[in-house]
Length: 164
Image 1 (cartoon, helix red, strand yellow):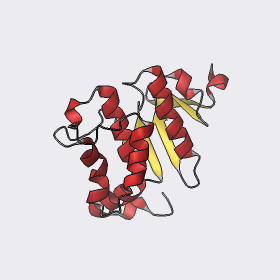
Image 2 (tube, rainbow, N blue to C red):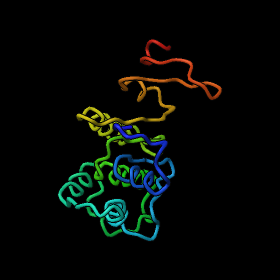
Image 3 (cartoon, rainbow, N blue to C red):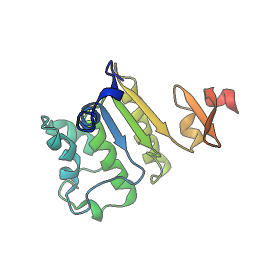
Image 4 (cartoon, rainbow, N blue to C red):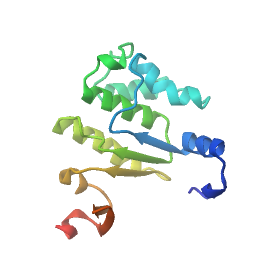
């Protein structure tokens, strides 16, 4: 991946590689409930000793309608708000590859489309890739490439219209 032989890396180097190049948007958000929204967003950057662009965080907080929640505990947010914080945390780290597990699962249709649009825009930046797992065919129709799974295996690839 990214020109590196991952099978030859030890656990520490694999962890460093993941931290530097891969972002995750988990279905369960994986926020630290007692930490503030801003501290949850900063956590991966702090762990990897990376520079923090507060302007990028502020812009994403505004874009995802979370301005003013910086100092709120993550546990005080709704599920949809927590999901958007998780996405901001991933995007601000600017990984090469993002894996997103049902990134719109806890969102209403309008917020879900906003989140998905941001992921799609991110994936169209040079050197970036986003892999989304979803059951939402409306969103799948907007993907560049779709792989369908059945009984634990891939059964088709292409776009959704070809598979319908």
